[in-house]
Length: 314
Image (cartoon, rainbow, N blue to C red; front, side, top):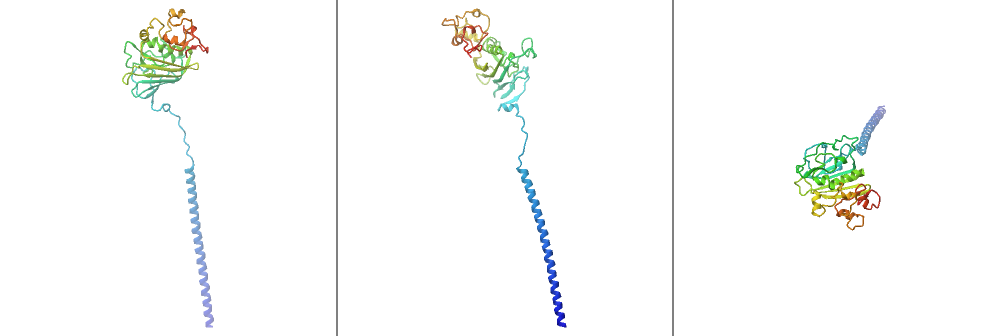
């Protein structure tokens, strides 16, 4: 009996131990499962965050492109604004200035010495005195900038682009220019040609100086297009009458002159060197005339206009 009781106790003890082990295994398994689920959840959450961060980084950043400032059209030059009627003769170095009256865009450039060296315009727009505040003198302003040199008795305050062609009167459009050249010579003739045509395109003026100290140019070169024809006018800043005299041309028509004279009545003997009644481009140039000769010029009827565009020598 005692022996049976011992077996029963051993059996109960074994069963109890096995039951505890199962409970511990289940608990351990549940703890591991919970731990794994937490780890997986954390891993998934981390992966989602990484994917989210990666997506943000990979997305292109779209920025509004600002409008290009005007001065970036002319690298190396500072864009400044100067009143069209400013009488100061001072020019800032290495700048670009709009010297067109009203809405016109005529761009003037200075070099590092403050010398006006270049003027450009896509289109020259003739003065409109019926819609613009033009003075009785035909100018936009009553006076011009006092660039050093214009105090001379023989030098004018010469416009690179004249009032009649839509230019202003500040120092970025004025150079001291020989008076006869400005009023009656090649400068005046060029302006008259553009006015008579009504417009010009692809305009460029290159102004040259004898040194870096003076504001008085030594020469000018104008390039522009009239009716599809490119014109190039180059002349020194000197008195054309004195040049003509030195060349023995004082009795001939002054360069570019449109004044009334005996020649305008048909006397071409001083120009028509071979006496055939016709004037060639070379004969006209040798006589001191600038090209092109326009249809309203007294020489035009004696010259051959092959393309019938109203110009000879373009």
